[in-house]
Length: 521
Image (cartoon, rainbow, N blue to C red; front, side, top):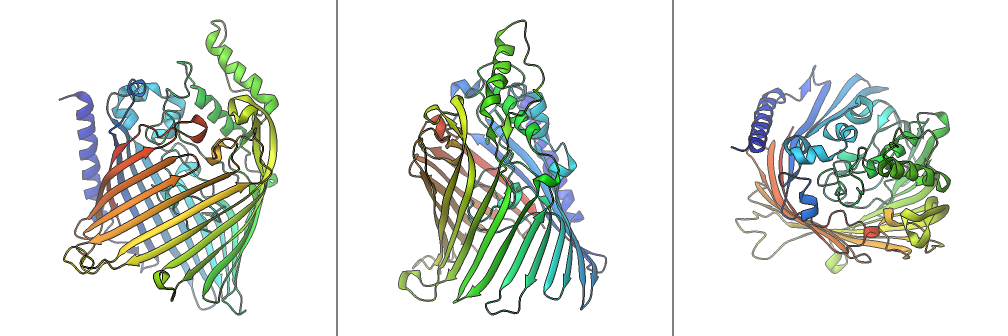
């Protein structure tokens, strides 16, 4: 048997045995007279490529470019519960091991060894493992949470409109495929809720972050299914790679914990005229940096000349700042209404989310090219989404032995954003804009049909970006094992559309079979 296949078999058997052992350990989820509640998951996800270009295949020995074991656990402990005061402590931990670079020797050797350490497994407890940890105090209408937290201010499947508080970790995840809670980054904050006695169930929420800045983390250069293929951005066969040279410098330039990096915001929510609504405001430092045009030249020259001149080396990352993280403000809101009349809309749920990004930072480059950056600019952005959710009875099918009365569910979301006072040289590629186009939009569709009393479930997930011609579809089927803890899911991830670099072609030729095994409790 091939050595790599042996590694894969041994790894898979070890995973299954560990998860079987976990079943008995996780059977009890309430401890200490039910003061402690536990829940969590163990999951294995694999992407097996069905499409790979020859120039990319030279970096792989197998078609597995993603084989990740992950686990998460949440614990809620009630310290005190009385009529006047409740004190609880909540913590959430996560862990992962991405085995593809270990099993595929050629793939592993092609990755920058320093970057690979942070990709394969967690390297820092606070940054990677500890996702949430906060104390929760409740006294009458007042609630105060202090600690590391994840905030949910919106509920879209692919894009973010009103959900603006937490940065994201995209090293192993992608919008529309993975759950939001799996790749949001927790930040330290003081969060206050107050339930007013005013009509409309009016509730006030305030957030203050004293200085715990977290940047958005991008996929690894050459990092499996979610990262940029090495052949696209690796002009030199060197260590560090071209993209790692930039990513690592952006990480080093990110602000550290400081009171100068404070963030604050509020949310006002209520229920009026049968509409759930909210208004938000958030003042923060943008998690995505822009480039200092005065520093980018010497920075790139150091890398280029360190590779092409035999008497020079790339050396250490320079001490001067190349990447800048700028402050911006966002106002927005959400509206949700269950339709009780309206013909075809009856029984559906309509959700609207919107935001207005004030003084969002951008770079300027010749013809909008990031490789020709020469300046910086501030722009205002208006964006939003309309989300439609409905359940359908399909005649002759819903009441059949297959569906056993379970309805077909469908969600359709249209998202758009508009950059005001757009310029042709504005670098917009990070926002999926076509070069020179101030508007970007997308349509996403999610469908689900439970079958045989939820033993089987058909799931369809997709999005389409009309202005740049990019699309993604993932038909899949999920099987829930007896006992409702185990599930297995398999399907196809198919990508297509425009080939232009500035509209993000990193997923071209990444069609894959996805395999997912999950244990939840």
